[in-house]
Every structure is written in C-alpha cells, then in structure tokens.
Amino acid sequence: MTQVLLSASDEALPVDFRESSERVLSYLREHLPMGFWSITRVENGRQTYLVLGQNAYGLPPGGSHPWASSICVRMVDGGGPRIAPVVDAVPAYAAAPVRDVVPIRAYSGSPIVDVDGSVFGVICGISPEEHGGPTPEQQPLLDLLGGLLSDVLRGERLLGQAQKLELELDAARDRDVLTGLVGQRTWDAAINQQFQRFTRLADPTCVVFLSVKADPRHPASSDDVTRRAATAMRAVLPLDSVAARLGGHFGVLLRNMAEVDGLQLTEALVRELNSLELRAYAGCAGWRPSEGPFVAIDEAFEQMNSDARADAFPSVV
Image 1 (tube, rainbow, N blue to C red):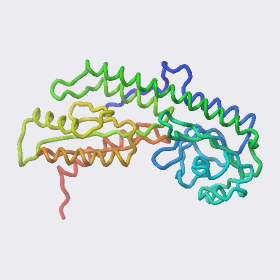
Image 2: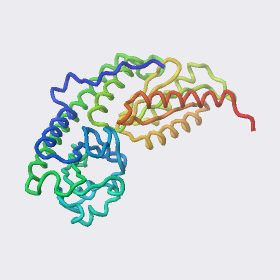
Image 3: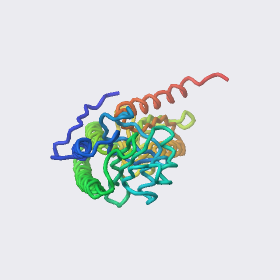
C-alpha cells in the first residue's frame, strides 16, 4: 500500500485549536497549578486527553476514560460546581467511578462548546490533594478560557468547511472515468487534510479499504465489476465521505464517524455488493488519538487482504 506523506501543520491557521489549548494549559499550570490540567475531548462515550503535559498521575496524552464515569459529565449536567476544592463535599463528584482509578480530591472544569451547542470537551483540572488549584472565586477566569477555546473551535469549523469545498473542487479534476470516484491524488489530499484536523481536534474518523471481484457463479468483466462496486458505494456511503479508486482496490475516508458506526456501515456496504452478485473483502478501522492515522490505515488494509486470502484458501472443516 502506498503511504501518504502527512503534514501536521496547516498554513491556513495562524492560531489553531491545539496551539491555543497549549497556551491555556501553560497559563493554568503557572497561575493555577493542579496535579493535572488537560484539554479533553468528549466523543463516542470517552473523554480523551487531547492536550496534556506532565502531571501528577503519569497519564499520557491520547489516553482516555469513560465519559459516564467522569466528574466532568456530572459538572456539565449540573450535578455540582465547576470548581470543587473538596470533592468529597460534593456527593455527585464523590461518587464518580473515575475516583476508583485515580485519586481526585479537588476538581476544576469548564466546558468547551462546539458550533451546534454540544459539548466538544472540557478544560479539566484535578488534584490528589484537597484545595489544589483555583478557588470558586476564580471560576469566571476558567469560564473565560473555556469560552475563548470555544471561539477558536468555531473558527476551525468554518475553515474545515472551506477546505472541504476546496477539496471537492479539486476532486472534479481528478475523477476516475470508469467509476466517477476520485483518484489517488485527491485521496492523498483528503487523508492529509483530515490528519491535520485530527491532530488538532481528534474528530472521529474511520478508513475503509475494499476489494471487489465477480462471484464465480455470475461471471462479469472487470470493468463491469468496478462499475457495479462504485454504484453500491454511492448508494450506501454518506455524502461526507471520500471514496476513491486506488488501482486494484477502493479506499473510503469516513469523516465524523466513530469506529462502531464505521464497522456497521462497512457491513452494510458488503451486503449491498453481495446483492449485486459481487464478492467483497473489506477492512475498517477508526483513527485513535494515541496512535495517529497510519495504525488504523494499516489495520484496515490488512483486514481487507486477510479476508481475501481466507476466501481464496478456505479452511477445511
């Protein structure tokens, strides 16, 4: 498989969300020190440490825990104050399951809001000692920082929309004649664009690879197989996806889609292809903040090839 040359920088962004997050954390660590300060992302039932420096707990960037077990979800739902110098004094916080994993005796948090009004994430601070970090009187400062990051996020979203439109215009000049799908050049550009955004925002992303051939019971030319495969992809895939013909196989980039949903969509695509008297071999994997995209890309590509090999050499029962 040809690897895509990725770049984490985006020249269109004078100040991006990650850079702004790092500045906020630098300020908080200097002026309101706690054992742990992180800009976290809430997605697919997990709270991920999107931006995180050295901390008293030894937790790594890209790590996560269940959102439902966190103190932050209780803060967002109004179960307690945004700043709790003594966690044990707040019943909802004291009972949070995350405390079974790490000792949390002081808490500070402020939501980061996405453009649709949903919670993108939280500025989260915790301490193994009581009275560590901000006092309740400093809540307006913490909320100001959360609001500023929400504003930067809105700018990122607007830029993302503009970049998608630009990619679509470029794709119009890179269409495969047989299928109408985009080619390798647009695929590389889409992967690189999504990688840049994933590095900053960890938006849920899946990649799918697909190999299709005629069912031996229903012979067909390679061109007919390819055309029918493209027809099935257009029928099943969401409009936000990028589908490409990459030599002897297809690639699909699923933006804003969690891995569990990507797997379900891949299964639906295979069923659609089977209904067209085709055999399909597919692999799907979600990008993970702790690993970057190449691990998922390799996993999906290997799964596609593994399925094809298993069909070519079926096990004897």
